[in-house]
Each structure stands twice: as C-alpha cells, then as structure tokens.
Length: 364
Image (cartoon, rainbow, N blue to C red; front, side, top):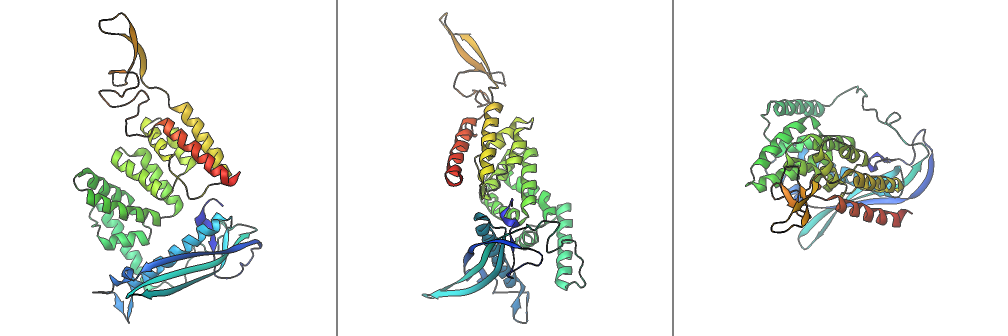
C-alpha cells in the first residue's frame, strides 16, 4: 500500500467478500483538546437551533476525522492495510478548575488478502442518492458562490470562507489563494499577515486528498516565477512531509536550472514512512545529483599584477571574473551557479547518505 490514507477503517469485525489474511495487533490514537476549542463558539452563536450548534458539531467531526487519520498512520506503520472494529470514545478530564476533552480511537490492525482499490471501493464516489438533505443543497450553493467570487477576484478571505473551503476541500479556489498570497508576500513589511496566511493556507492544503496536494504543490513549484512563493511551496512540502521521489526527479530533469535547485532543496525533506524501495530511490537521487551539477563558470588562467606568474580564476555566467573558491562579486553565485543561502549539491548528497544509513538500520 502506497499511502497511509489508503488504509481502510471500518467499525465492523469483518468485510463482505474480503478475507483477513493476518491479525496484527490493536492500534490506537489519542487526541486531547482544551475546552476553549469550543468555548469560542458558544458566545453569540447564530446557528443554534433546538439547543444544537452546527459549528460545534463541525468541530467534533474534525476531531473524529483527525483520530481516524492518526489510527491509519499507526496501522500503516506496522504493515496493515485495514483497521477493523473501530471504536471512538470521548471523555472529559477536569481538575483545578480546568477541563479538557480526550478522544480515544481503538481498533485492530489487520492485513486483507485483497486490498480495497478504487475499482472495488466499498463506497462509490459516483453513487446517486435517493434523497438529498437540505444541508447538502446549502453547502453546494455556498461552494458555487465561493468559487464564483474567487474567479472574479471578489472573495473576502475571513474566517468563514477559510473554514468552508478547507472543510469542503475546494481546490477550485487554489489559483485565487496563490494570487492573494503573492500580493501579501510582496509587502515585505507585513510579515504578520504573511505568517497568518501561511498558517491558514497549510491547513487548507493538508485537508486536500494526497494526490491533489502533490499535484498542486509540485506542479506550481515548477512554474512559479515568484521565488518567495516557490519557497513557501517547498516549506509546505517540508512541513507536511510530502517528499515524492518521482516528482522531485521530474524537477531535476527539467531544463530550468532554477527547478533543479528547488529539487535539491526538496531532497533534504522527508516523507511520513520509508521502505526498502526508498533506499534504492535515494541512492538514485544521489547519483543523479553527482552527475547533474557541474561547474557552470569557466576556469581560466590570469596574470597577476606586477608578476609574470599566472593564477587560476573563474568567469561567471554574468561575465565577471572571480577568484577560485569565492562567490561572484556581481551576482553572488559560486562556480556551480548557487548563491550563498541556497542548498548546495554536496550538502544534499551528505543528507541523502545520512538518511540512507538511518533507514537501513531499521529495514536491512
């Protein structure tokens, strides 16, 4: 199984038409949340009907979903492709005038003889309903309105739209978000706004499906001319552990040298889990780096002042002549085309080698 999120989680002890090959062990996930997570919504609520709050319910659903995601990771780590008998309980812990909610998810990790695939999924994404709830109609109406405003550039990104596009995984607004983020990054004085936008943006990205995350981030990092925005893409890849061998290799194979340098930064990041194939892939990346990054400057000999002796210098792509081992005095690049603050090939090679050693200690 390629991804922890592909682990099937069910509440029953068996699956019709599926044979359990092996029972592994119980797995669990625990989430502790302060009551302030909900208290902010209890004052001035406008969506309370019959003593219930839709906002409060959405927070509970978010916690439940997080617990399920964590139990998937726990099962994936021990080689399971399914968790059966899922049970989720929520308890309140209190003491000294303070209280917290503790949500516990427990199930049994197993290996199904035949993995559930997209073609044999228990739930069909294209299934038509006999009836549809008014909530779904209202959500679809809101979704269409938000997409329309985003396309016209009139969407105001306050708390409510952020919450809606995140919880409903609306990737159609991604171009609008990029344009908004780029405008914020252009104002170097307003770092607080940039930090706040990034926090909301990364939560939005993380809510998307795994394939959609990789597609949006890697495709945009390869075409983005705004280096600040491209760096934010790479930071999200780092923070969410979205290292992807195939997509990084595509960047290395690009004719754009800037993409090769971005790929070099990405190889120093991680993925949630590693297996023996990753060792092979990492070795291939290391070999590729060694063969890809050659000197872009030209070495020549130059006569020294007041002396007949010559010394070796290098001429940068910008035309400036520089001392060997020094950065270009004009564009601040070394002979390989890297600036002082960029990840160098040797640094990336050493990082990969160290990662291979650490992974091998567990797997080989």
